Length: 400
Image 1 (tube, one colour):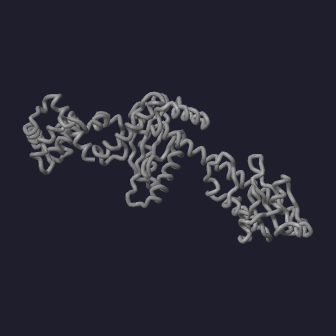
Image 2: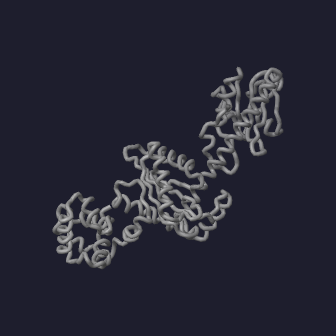
Image 3: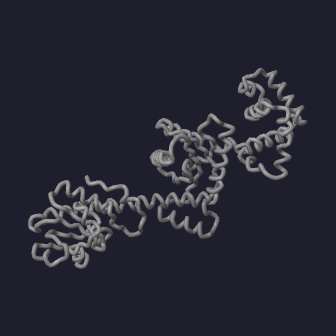
């Protein structure tokens, strides 16, 4: 089967155009079979591909006749002598989308190549149709990516942007009434060059399309991929969503993909996608710090920490962090702060906190009493515990 070069499918013009790369592919394929020169001319009658490279860029009078008459033109010796730099042969129109987009010509006596010429034309038009379809698919894929970026807030919130998104969603057969949740995939490839990271991102995007056929995705940076996962009825429950994302992460990990997944909150309506994306992005930042060994972070598991992470500026933030600053003045090695973080991470329960810190319960109790003494707060009071927790979240967020 004749295949087309990828460059020929990488354009997004509304009208299909025959380019030099595709034209040369037609020439090369034909000349592997035929022992005669083949030329391909564009809509202007210029040779854009040929077995005789010196002729590329020159005008082809036979092609001009084909374009003018919209039909095949045979040139014999007598006719060739009357045309500029012409040779005997057959020139046939190449059609795509119902119009002539170029001309293919075979050199030689017309009676000896007539049958071959028609076969070359048919094969060339098949390649043109493949290229056109690939162009449409590539264009639609880029438009889907643009739609995703629009929905997660690149230009959301303006009437023009909302109208654009709704119109293109209809054209791309994307049902915006289907509830979706944002997922951020952060690819871990620090040792790779930019081209290699981009290739890995594209591989992840392709595999994700196979694992989650209904998902919409778009690159938002060299490492980050935004995904809008469609939700089945009743799937807004966090445990079901988490299990679904964990399955995708496990499949990709088995294929050598190293990445963190941050699942945002599920919010109602198309306008909720922006908030879902924002929560996914914040969840990744907080998850890296609070769950360093995890590959999947969920907003539902980190809601309070995520919501507090954005309060790191202003006089209120200064006051919230003051107890931690008093603690830091007497905690040079950070042992007490790590103890406090572990205690909060385990819901202020002694046994699991001590186990996580690899210390005895009595040691944990001593450290907590020391924290209370240095901060001036009572760890038996909810308000004081909240003050310490919020301050800890803000301090850790400021250090990122």
